Length: 407
Image 1 (cartoon, helix red, strand yellow):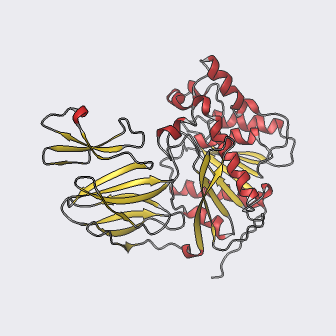
Image 2 (cartoon, rainbow, N blue to C red):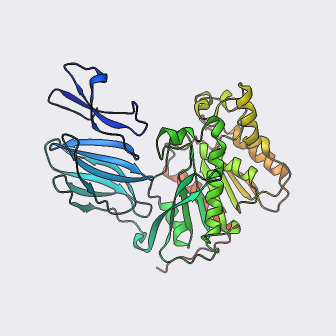
Image 3 (tube, rainbow, N blue to C red):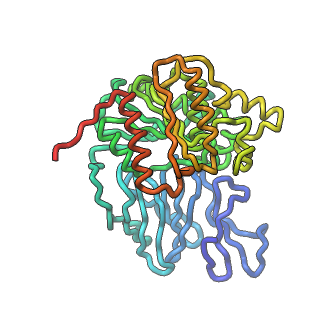
């Protein structure tokens, strides 16, 4: 519920609206069939609504970036809020009767900053920005749209130094997820900055299976449609090479958890696609994943091998079961010995089978983090150690020789 105005409850609902809408329900006769629509469903995903000073502040997800608008108490559009850059609104904080409040906003190249917003006229200004040892002004974020295998247009963020030469020689790091209605909007990561400072290109596509465009987009990458996710990612890599952002010899691919499945499936289907592959805490045995810990809960996205049709589909892309004698890219498998979400057996079996079947000269190694789980809550010291090893592996195998500013 957003708020109560007089005798009406203002709520957000996905009833008959996969991208959500705002309804007004009479509390004296709480019959939803008689609810009044205040803000109709948009082509953009409605993420949050704040009510203050007889105004609604609406935060939408538009092509995986934030879009804000202000409407009056009857739902009439007053104006769009002009946000500072391509980025993500993480929070909107207002007192109910105060027209002045704060918006938390972040980008791929700048940590979360706090802006003040005057809801009466839409004026927005910077209040506080954290200081980090990274010159964000030297970098830019672009958003492109590329066709997947079936022609579906997929959004992708590309982050790099301003004026970078598109000659196919840039090291590139392609990250993806594509599942469980999750999405990766702009976020700031200091470890990514180290790669960008060395002339790297960082790319994040909005794959089907995620929540970039609501529930229909999510379902288009689940169960018997899961191959769409892999096709979307493969097409992203091919786009980056075709447009000369990078080349296959300079491309690294990475994903975590369900994203680890993505990397495992992509590298077994297209071992020629990249130079480096990093499946992290991945779901890699698709025929038995549901038999361990919480795995059964993922059947809504994957289906299970208990069903004949789903078994046949899972078997076609299950990373573990599709390893063959061929040349694989340099591969670093990452897992934790106490991962009780995606048990490390997935990574153990996948890594061992890859080592047995790889006929290239590229290394196939596994890094097992001791006394560590799936990732959430991992102390800073362990995060530093993990990312140091991961980026060292990427730099070495992509031929990146780091340079450092003089003190």
